[in-house]
Each structure stands twice: as C-alpha cells, then as structure tokens.
Image 1 (tube, rainbow over the protein chains, first blue to last red):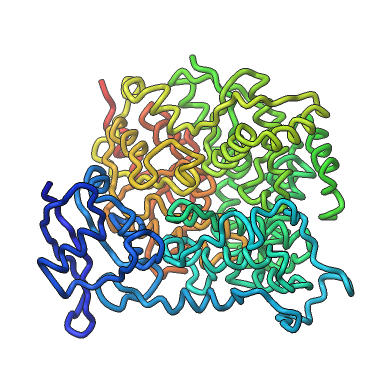
Image 2: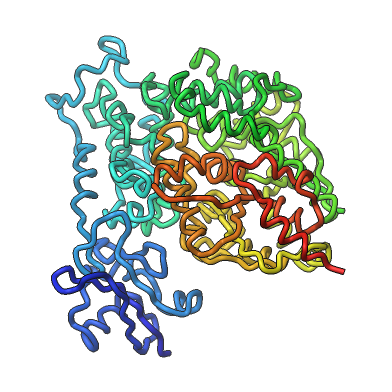
Length: 332
Length: 296
C-alpha cells in the first residue's frame, strides 16, 4: 500500500516559519509509524529530525502527535491510522517548545518531575518542616490504602511503570491552560512516593506542596492523561486519590480542596449541587465579588440558581450514606 | 414510546433549566418517555471522589438502584453525570467488594443494585436507539446553510474504557446528528478538548482560557453556532464567554446551544420554548435564518 506521511518541519536556523512536507512511501506488513519515519529519513530526506531509540515502547523517546493524538510512533501501526485518517500526519509533542522538526525541548517537563522530589525521603529530609496541619508527633494517615493492600512496595495503580514519554503532558488540558501546572506525569510520581510506606514523609509535606497553586488541584479532569498513556497508567485517578488523602489529612488550604468539600457539604445538606453555596465555599465572598459581572449577567438572563434549594425526595437516604461512612463531622 | 429513567443532573434543574425544558420538548417529539427520579441525588460533579471514594459509590449506586427498581436504563444530558454514573456502574459490575459494600448501604434504605442498568447520553440514545432516520422525519425546519461547531467536551468520550459511545480519537456521532438536521458540521481540532469548567472556581483565568481557545478556533472556522452535550461546558462556553475573551485577548461572540436546543429548533421549537433568552450570547440572528427553512 502506498501512503502519505505529512510531517511538521521547522529548522529555526534556516526556516522563517514551520511548514509541512509530504512523503509518499510504501508500507510493509506490521509497519509502525516509527518504521515509516525511519524509511523517510533513510530514503527520502535525511534532515527529518525525530527522537527514537528502543522501538519497543519501553524508552518513550518517539512520542509525537500522530493525526492529532499523542502516541508512541513505535507502538502505532500505519495500517490502523491510514484506515481511520487516510494519512500519517505527524507533529511534535504539545505543551513544550519545539527545537527542530519533531523534537521538543523537554526541560520544562523534567523540571516539574524534579520539583516533586522523585526519590524516597530519608530521615534527614524535611521538605516542609513548618507545616502544622497535623498535631505534634502525629503521622500522616493513610486512609485510602493500607500496606496489606499494596500491589507492591513501590506504590500502586501502575504509576511506577511510567516511562516519562510525555504523552500525558502533551495532551494535558491543565498544562494548555497553565504552563506552570505540574502536569500528570509529575503528579503521578508524587502519588507514587506519597503512597510508598518506606518514604519518610511524616508530616504530609508531599501533599502540602502538591496542594499549592499549579499543583494537583489544578487538574481539569479532562481524562486525556489516562486515555493517551501508552502504558495504561491513569494519572487523573491517582490525582483524585491524592485529593482524598489531602482532605482526610486536613490539608485543605487550597481553593481546590475547598471546592470539593463545598460540593460534598452541599450534597449532605440538600442532595443537590448548590451552585451558589459551592461558589462561596470555594472562592469566598471576595472571589464572588470578583465574579460579580458574570453573576449579574447570568442573573439578568434569569440563570441565577435558586438561593434555597428544594431537598431531593427521600433526603434521609443521603444522610444515612454520610453517617455510614463517618463523614458527617469532616466538614462542619 | 421508549421509556428511560431521566437523570437531568443538578445544573439542568438550576441555572441551566433551559436544558431540561428543551430535553422534555424533543423527548415528546421523538417518542421518548422520560420517567422522573425525584429521589436521585447529585452525582458529585466529577469531584466528590476526591472527598471520599465510597461516598461516590453510595450516592451513585443509589441512583442506579432507583433506576433498576423502575426497570429502565438511565438517560443523561450532562457529560460529567454520564461519566460519573458510568464509572460507578462499571466498578459495581466488575468489583464484587464494591458492590457488596454499596449494597450493604442500599439495604439500609430499602434498595438493592444488581448491575442491570445502562447509562447513556441523549446524543447516543438518539443515534443508536431512536435512529437518525426517525429524527430526520421529525424535522420541520432544516438547519440548511447553518454552520454548526460540535463541541464534544471530555466526559462523553474519555476515558474510552468506561464511556464507549464513540471513537475517542475521531468521534462522529455529533457530526452525523448535525447533518441529519440539515446543518453543516464545522471541523476544528478543539472539538474534543477540555472546556476548563472543572477548575473554574479554582483558577478562573486558566480555566476560561481553555473555553476561549475552543470558541476562537470555531469562530475562525466560520461557525455560526456551537453546540455542546454538557451543561457544565455550556457554562464555560456561554456564561463565561466574556471573561474568556478578556483572558485570551480575542473578540469572541459565538452563540452556544445545548444539544436538545439545536434539535428542538429543527423540530419546530420557538425561541421562548427553547429558552434562548437565558443565554449570554444571542442566538436570534441564526434562529431567524433557520425559521426561513420551513419544510412543506
């Protein structure tokens, strides 16, 4: 089968602006997109630049956008892409500056990995000694998972399988919105260490640092990191587990934690999402005043939600759930 | 008539009532009987899992059990409700421990869940169960000449291991529906990206910039109107459109409709019936154009 590879090209030393170049090549059975790019480089254009190494979905080097979706080129079959899109269009990873053609500058990604301290803290490591949310001598609670439930000693939910390929980072809606956001790979790593029983984080410093602006509460829950991880890891799911752990350990200074607690409180009281109350709980009165033009605009259009919500029928059922789970006292 | 347990979600019953009204309008026209569940609670808005995972299981397990008791599958009109109920359903069906503890709670309130309910969004109920042919027959005003930008959002597509309605990389359900109504779907890259709603109260600037980018790209591709299957996306895209414009420093003015509103217009719904006056960006000019397309 003859098919077209359309590649993003940009060499800042000679090109004024990026452009696309097309190469028509023949496939062979089982051909991957990486095979195709290597064929283009070997037979048509030796200047086409891209990262690659293992060809076995282990090293994570050849991540790129293939027909708009970030994938490992070595793990992506040409035939499947042609069947769906009729072309192999390749672009560099998103959310990172482009160095040349399909090669991006990974520095910002690895800076964020370093920022979460991706190693087990020893007895002398105190990364946030001044944190006082926990009582003197009290250790951080592990309410979600217990040691006996650990799939292995290096964390769970497959987070140690991350190959740092940056597929999740490239697709992350949170990073698109805020370039300072830590992003899914760094946060999955933060989870992996915060869950490790050998880690000497006795005062919850990992979760405190992770709760700061541009941290775990800035996740937009777009699910792209889970969807497009080539190793089957779900950063968004473990980010949510860290939200739960932070809130259960009273690490609730962030707007994001207040927002989650506000929604839970609203459900406990009415069975519904009380839009006004959740907004006040999340951003406070000053935040509401900042948003006054939006609120007034919505009010004028008749979109203002009711100030007092009607309870759902059989509201007592919901109270039983909160009581059963011993959640009543958590947010009073 | 096909019966469904109707789960409008909270926003469609509060600030986004026009979504509930237009859903009921088109349901009647398309032979969908919506069975209300006044006992159903909020799904947790996609974030209650971060408060307590078991609470997410209990409150949504209860909703699933209520639908099972009625004997109907659940029809949703919100992406986030669809994903949350689907996630819980998947966990209860595949994890016996989760089902056991949820049923222990449900037994205290006189309910039980055995995992027979399916959760499906209106968009895909129309495509797969009502049928696009039937929809076409019901059209009284075609959307001929109207360029419609479909905005899928996230939770109706991802994760595809849980919500399995469409091709996550290249979905087509929305485009097929727009074509059936006579409209022209506008292709644009951000149709499956995030609207930013989940962090609108956490970081408004970054959140609304996502919505702004979506609207700007659709506008650049000459869209007359954008349509979304989710009321949370609608809040980001319509209610916050002015803030989004300021944050991305672009001029934005694109009417954004709920999915059943677009269908409702094609099925003869009036401006008032569809609740367009409740929107931030006026749909009046496009509506006038559609009203000239009456089928004989």
